Image (cartoon, rainbow, N blue to C red; front, side):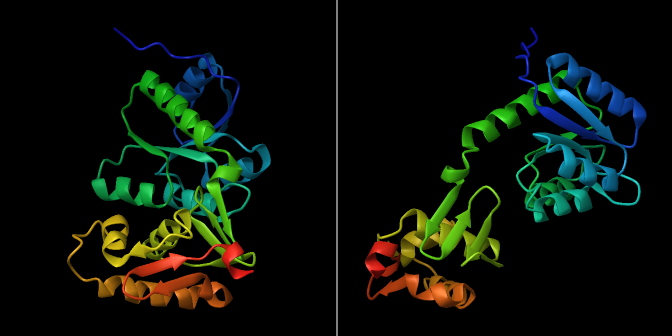
Length: 240
């Protein structure tokens, strides 16, 4: 018994692949479902169309001529105009390292060739539903005084200036921000941020807090040390 495919509501999908047969197959099934489909065969064309057409999702092959799909994905995520576009990687490369690299660069899903066209359509729909459910820009953005955290893009800025954080520093700041005003013990932070047992290497938290404060610059005093307990991100109200 096959799963029913819910008709799409006309979102724009960009299909990027240098194999005409694959492009035609994917475009046909997506259009039949109700998506508006554009196609590109090179990374440069894909980036230009993504900027001009603002697709809701890009089906992106990794093995493109000249510029790889990884390069395209990295540039999509680096640009303000395209960083929120959903991306489904479609590739003949099956190595786990490639899949992990794609996901770390910000892909939303990964499908290997050969593939079922119906599965691809279902995955596109599932990604777009997730994006729609969590795509409220206000809900994805946390602002605490001069610090702004874009959870969808994993970006942090202080007074509108981007701050480069490691993944661990980002998770640490996000944990403090989501629980702002409340003290977070070192052991709790280890469990939450590092998935570590609560009785080991609490000094790790202190070192990361120190580096995080250095990167936050003028906003560093928002992270307050509560002696004997842990750390707290103070709310703007507490600073007035």
